[in-house]
Image (cartoon, rainbow, N blue to C red; front, side):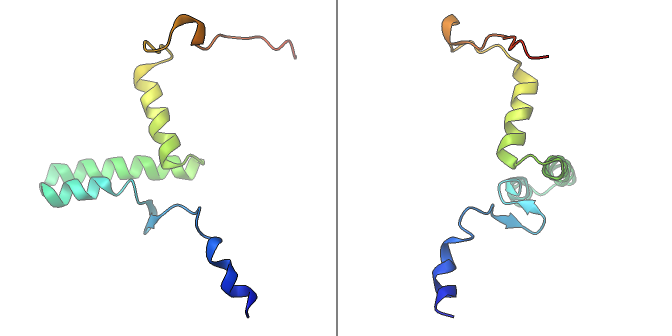
Length: 94
């Protein structure tokens, strides 16, 4: 029993959940509470559903947000100098 008291650190890296959603995805519910209209409820439901589907595919909320951002922006990174941009490489393994 004394050993169980030292397990407090075990759950520290688990994501915070609000029912089945990541707690960061519930931000959209906050928008609904601030501006309660049918369309904000629909938008919140759609976005929370999208992020829930991403989690079912194995992406975390942060990884899904980066994937969506990459889909909108693309590979071009204007703030990076030319030498720091990612290059296409061929590892030669087939």
